[in-house]
Structures are given as structure tokens and as C-alpha cells.
Image 1 (cartoon, protein in one colour):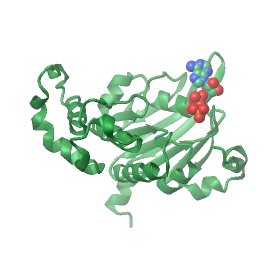
Image 2 (tube, rainbow, N blue to C red; image 1 turned 90 degrees about the vertical axis):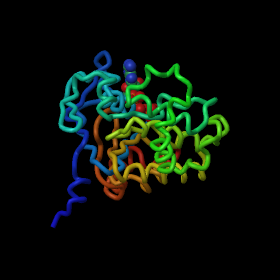
Image 3 (cartoon, rainbow, N blue to C red; image 1 turned 120 degrees about the horizontal axis):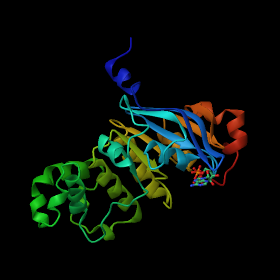
Length: 258
Ligand SMILES: Nc1ncnc2c1ncn2[C@@H]1O[C@H](COP(=O)(O)OP(=O)(O)OP(=O)(O)O)[C@@H](O)[C@H]1O
């Protein structure tokens, strides 16, 4: 019998069909089909130049596809603008740092919370005008384990905790699908463990799609992995399936420098 929660994790929230992008005749992404599910962490991996960033740019509408179709929450967004899809809840992090170094951790989250509430026009008001967002901000800080650092300046946080604060400011936008671009880039072991735990928790009630080069992170966190090579899907499935695929081993897994 399929339970309600199984049904939820089988729910596709973002899908692409035949996604293709040419750059002057060169197909950076070619005929990619992708399904991203609610409450799962999904990895997009592949060697350098495989097309991962281009797929992210296409899904978030920073780039227009040459052909193909993208659906988000059942709506065709192929021709929708990047700002409109962000407002719908398809949010990308780690490309644009949303952290203000001279604001406290709590104020960073409160400022981020203004945006979905359409309060940006009140930005000139004193920060105390944001007090009504305190409960929401503290709930978010608890979600990512930064509640005890709420009064610290963002600039005082360790590199790993700054990335965690970035996740919190992204969560303030209430993403239905969160796209993370190499969340572990530049991190050491302890920070990787912290950020992995946060992503796992965040992925319990949202879809997460991440580009990640660190394969031990991918095997630990991701229930589904899509492998790209030269713009095309080479393999798709759980870690055991893709890591045992001889084509993947040849193209990617055999390399231990990534
Ligand atoms: N604006 C562009 N114009 C021309 N070619 C591009 C453009 N953007 C990407 N490409 C090419 O498309 C291919 C895929 O690039 P992309 O950056 O998507 O790969 P990637 O998998 O993200 O690589 P990496 O892991 O190195 O970041 C590469 O050959 C790249 O040179």
C-alpha cells in the first residue's frame, strides 16, 4: 500500500523535457529530461564542462532554452522570466551571496524575510521596524542551527556558518525547490558535515537540486543522481545504480580529482 508520505515524495515539482541549449551551433545541453521530487535531495553531477551550470541557468530561466519544456508545480514556465519563477518558489542559492557582512545574523534573516512580504519599499525604515518578523526569523535560525549566533555579525561567522546563513536567507524566500550550486565548494571536513546536515534537514520538506563535485557528499545526501556528460544524460538513479554504471565509471567516477 502506498502511504500519503510516499505519495508526497513521489510528487514531481520540477520537470524538464527535451531541454536543449545551443551556443552558436554547439549544444551545451542536449535533450535533457529531468524530474525533481518534493522532499528529496537530487544531485546533478558530471565532469567539467558537462553542462551542469547551463542546466541550472535554464531551469531558473537565467537562460532561455533553444528547445524543450520546463514545468514547475504543474505550470509551464518555459517562457516565464527568472524573477517570476523565483517569486513562484524556484530559488537558487550560492551564486549570489545574500549575506550582508555588517548586519547581525538575525538582521540578515529579517531583511531577507521582507522580500516575500513585499516590504522592500520600507527598506529605509529603521531595522527595529522589522521586529514583527522576529518570530519567523528565529524559527528559520533554529531550523539551520544558528539561533545561538543570532547577535553575531555575519562577518564574524566561520566560512561554513556563513554558507549556512546564506541557506537561511534563501529559506526566507520560502522555496518550493531550492537549487544549490556547489554548496561545499571551498569547505573543510567539519563545515561539510554541518552544511550536509542542514541540507538534509531542509530537504525533508522541500525539493533540493544540487550541483556538487564532492561524491562522498552526493552519496551521503542524495536519493537521486543525474549524471551529465557533454550536455546529455549519461545515467540517472540512486547512487548505487549510477556508480555501478560502467559508462559513468569511465566518464566520471574513476576520476578521484573531482
Ligand atoms: N555562454 C556560453 N557561450 C558559449 N559556450 C558556453 C556558454 N556557457 C557555457 N558554454 C559551454 O557549454 C559547456 C557546458 O558548460 P557548463 O558551464 O554548463 O558546464 P559545467 O558542467 O557546469 O562545468 P563546470 O563543472 O566546469 O562548472 C562548456 O563547453 C562551456 O564552454
